Image 1 (tube, rainbow, N blue to C red):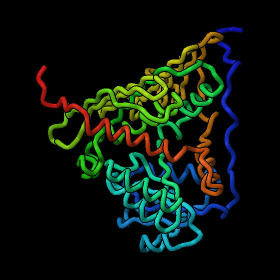
Image 2 (image 1 turned 90 degrees about the horizontal axis):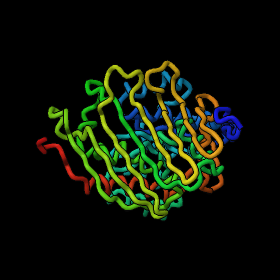
Image 3 (image 1 turned 120 degrees about the vertical axis):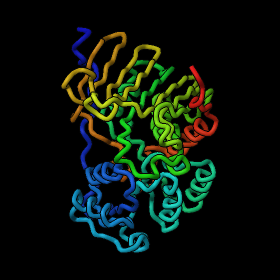
Length: 361
């Protein structure tokens, strides 16, 4: 076979809606981060019906209604939580407030779908675990850099098919553009956003666990720094960590706020996955120096060396799986333990990190 034909592997079919209109009703509470739009859009694509939105800021609500004009505006949070039709509440509140919102949602008998990071402290994690156990509700997490990125979905499919053998290392790079002037004040307060390894890093821990098939990992070492933003002393603009998983694989991830203005997108996010029989590289959002757009995956193994361009070809099965999980009480989209373990490790990396900010060269 030609090393460039790529004929051995192809994405699974694009997912279809899994429910009929009105069969799975959702609401949105907490519009502090723009990820709530992607969360709701993903669920709507799976067939969900968006009934309510609530946020104390009318301007945020109005912007949300511009995107989702059929949604009803709730005067209070209780108006949403008391509605028996609502099965799931999606929210992207201030990070440190996401757990408290989740406790209220689950206490009202509804499943909860929160933006990452789903919480900021180990004490909050303990409260969330207890509430899940007590209520039987779900505390689902939007680890978007895996579940809402087509290269990331396709990489998982390739690994499941054995394309690179046993995964022994995952390296994740999570650069982001700061755009400081457009950020809310809470974004720069560490007790509110949780620190860079908790915030952005939780994406990467999720991917390390998922691609290695691991259920736990040890933080070997971690670092944080504020290298270039002294005017925002609460901001970590850099962080990295090394992990060893319970499968014996290793993981490294780096997060930063140093995307330069000249880059055509908000971050050159990449993931490198090494297996015993090949490797995968994801260039998620840009193929640097080209106008080829997002969605690039490179695979090399014993049969081929192939560049896949998967934008618009893979879709996002997570959302349909989550809807069906809520209806059937299954765990196909993501196990509850995985969702919690990823943030547990990220918080551990944050709280044990060495701060490099004040060291001299």
